Length: 330
Image 1 (cartoon, one colour):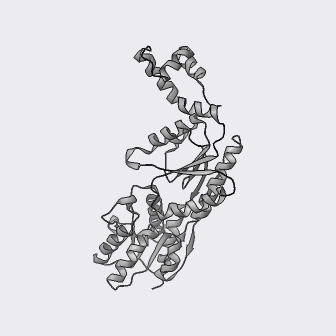
Image 2: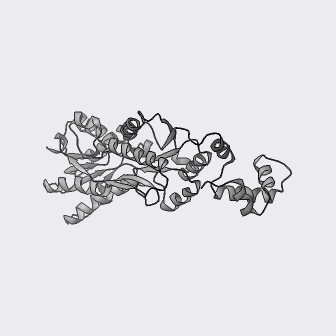
Image 3: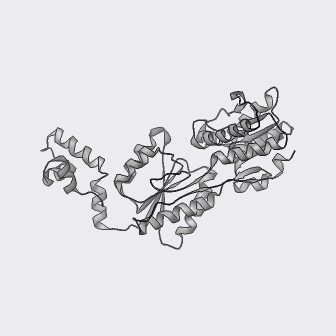
């Protein structure tokens, strides 16, 4: 059950009137008491504005999607799945950008405190399990997308298996010197795809080398841009020796990489990752990540959680599928 000012007063060992004065910014409360009350309220996930809103309306017919970047094609595909399940339910969708440079967890906390929506979709925020457990105190329905957790409903993808499958395919075609065209190495998807790449090399008794990881100079959106892919491919093609093949960490980067290959009039086999709709029209071999389905099912879980808060936690991890097109068949 949501916490009330009665719970806060009891925990802080003060009267309800004192708690009320703190929330109304009264100058008659000692500073130490004020800090204690606010700290306890924060720990309990209580926000006075949210409490007033709950009194006014138990249901807002609204869910909120929290995302790190909305200009990314990955989120556009997910959004289609989310919208398709909401269109007939008369539920409004609000999208809130999260600035990764300002502390993801703290921003999520502040949004959940205000309880602007009936439930929240957390997309690719990659909070730690400890942080996710702290969010339980807000007692609001959450559904994680592009993440896996035992704490909340979640829909994820096996990035390690995807990286492994893409690299193994190139190895089994006879290529031995395979470059990894990377995004920001500290980002969770890149780390997991790199892990799969390393696993495939190890199984084929090929030593891993950091010198075979190539990044672009532009790190906007964690390096998941066409420009960054173009820059990274130029580095690969100017390297000696030039690798036999390339595993690219995302389709967006691969689009830029393909342009660099075309501009220099060379041939280099490449397998990418995501299977965005544009990949079919550029002949890009890639790991299919069912973004539409992930958006649809994560939203479906959230709606079910709103309607039945006591239902068992549901988590689903999608398995990768390799789609072969012309970019790898050289």
